[in-house]
Structure formats: structure tokens, C-alpha cells
Amino acid sequence: MKQNLGFRAWYYFRMGWSTYFAFVFAAINTLTVTYFLAIESYPVLKEIFPSFIHYVIILAAVGIPILTSIGYVHFKKSPSYRAESTVSYESNPWALRDVVNSEYTLLVTLRVLEMLNKLSEKNNDSSEELKESVDLENELREFLKNRTVDNKFDLNYFKNMS
Image 1 (tube, rainbow, N blue to C red):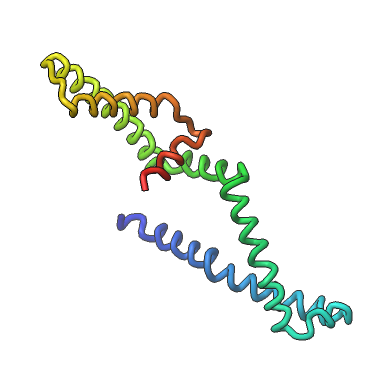
Image 2 (image 1 turned 90 degrees about the horizontal axis):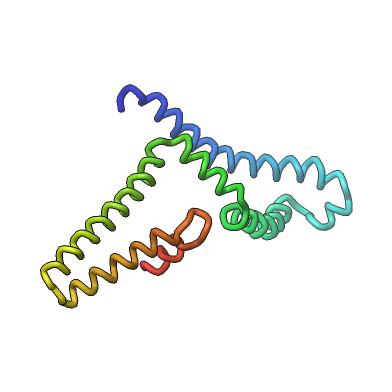
């Protein structure tokens, strides 16, 4: 960790700059420049926005909902965020390893469950626990068979957990 301290600091700096400082600075800059170069030069616009404060309030009232909607579309409706996520996993072997490890964990869990159920059946265990275990095995098998990256099966399962 010490050998990459400089890169970690660089990453934190870039996140602070791009997420917070540059965002606020760009908003203030855009509002100031557009008002004093465009609005003040046109009397019609000056009637709509009589002062800089009016301009900021009206633009915020209109712009924040519009930009929030654009952000929603970006994350929920547009394929661009999926592409960004894919690139992120392709370039981050640790995140990709988590996904692969969880898939193998599911497969191993299913195999162990199958073996336990077979042992229980051999011992003629006909208890309620065996029935629950067999049901769980079938549910896991169905889960693994039906889920894909494109369908909402994982998301629906996640929502039903809570």
C-alpha cells in the first residue's frame, strides 16, 4: 500500500476536484458568464431576468429537475451506464474477481446441498428439514438456470430480500 500512496493521493485529488470543486466552479462560472455576457446584452432577456439572483433562482428551479431527470435516464434507461459498468469490470480485476467468486460460491453451495440431500435421503430422513433443503436446492437450481445479466431476475430477487 505504501508503494502506491502517490497514486492513491492522485485518485483522491481527482475525485475531489471533479466531483466537488470543478462542479461548483463550473456552475458558478456558467451562471456568471451567461448572465453578464448574454442576459444583460438583450433587453428582452433582461425583463425576464431583472437581476442575477432572479436568473440563478429561475435557472435552478428549471435546471435541477431537468438535470436530475437526465441523470435518472442515464442510470436507469440508457445503455450508456451499462457500458460504463462493463468497462469498469474489464479494467478492475478485483471487482471482476468478486463476481466470479460469487458465481463459484453459488455453484459449490448447490453441489454441497445436492450431496447433503442425497445423504439425507439414503438415511431415510423424511423430516420437514429435508423437505426444506430439497426445496432450497430446487430454488437455487431454478435461480441459476433462469438468471442472466440482461434480465431483471437478480434485481427482483434483491428487492424481495428486504
